[in-house]
Length: 546
Image (tube, rainbow, N blue to C red; front, side, top):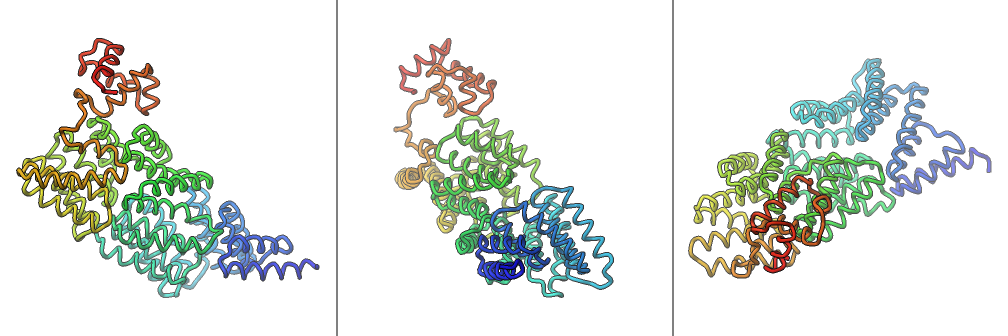
């Protein structure tokens, strides 16, 4: 078959496969056509998109560079500029700042030669939007995305309009205008679900909107749009990008719903996919979710290692790491970690993620005033959230503070409200934790029968979920095993000490420093009145501590 005829056949198959969203077939056929006769810039862009969608990001860059050169040769300055902007955006998302800057500079120089207004000038604003967003400069993000959206609307560019909407919506949410921001996110998502956008922009919109919903603690919308993203991914069996992000979002939602084994599996798979694609920062987000499940189920050593691995990959390991320290009987380390994270967090959504844990940790260390300040800030951030996740967290935090201040009556009212909202949000673990505190409030008010009913209901949920630490913490006092004053972490250290392990081995196993282990061993000997490690071991066996 002559090369031109063969190329025409393969090209037609490639275009049809691309239209049918069969990315693997499109990539193969368009690549075959390109090998027979170099493709024109339009088809090179199709080949570049299909390469990206089957996970070959390096090929995307190479092909877009070729398309850019072909547009320049053809004298189509605007198309060449748009291709350069897309190269910049992809390279920024890959964190290749130098190359990204070079392509943006080239696009800007090309557009300077264009005398008339054009939609590409709107596209040229998007790299700056990404840069300001990464720096948390939300007013700048809003101003630039609003300008880009106006240009997109004027020229009828659905892709640019959708991206501008999600950036403006995220900025408004970060600036405290949650309702306005969510409305724009919903508008962008409607365009994605209606099939009005190109495939890569569709995936970017899905992931950005879901991430924004989760950062804004809008769990209902996050569930709705994650289900839509999962359906969109399932319709494209060869799709590689966006599927890992979908898994992380699904893992977080499954965690809220109490489906912890499923959440662990989804997060672990997402981590492997991101690691294979060479995106360690995204893999770190998945590892953090793995750590959360380990912590909730009482696998503290595995949780500690996972939190640290997430931190090494660039993911903030708070508040989970501090909550792990608290569960392990290290309240001072927990307080230091959460205070450091709060000092560093300057965005409303980031602080809202940390403040509920800060309340719990500061109460545990006796800093009621600090806990009250954290709760007040959380309440201000939750203004306008009636019956959502933030409202539940505010009610729970307020109730815990009131309970700590011996105001059981007010505490009971706040905690009942928290429990009802968590129930409505289908979040069984959080609902059970609120109910355990309701039980304590009832007990302090003298209604032991109500306290017993509430506590047993909470323990039933903890038992069903496999929440071992919470189950142990809520054991009725008569059934509680005497640990002779040792904290849960000290009991862990004692078990390993009794097995004959050195401080170094214990530190490695529990993912602690040797100095921390030395402090725990010293505390154990003092609390048990034991003169040596051997004496502590004998005491532990004699009193059933192991």
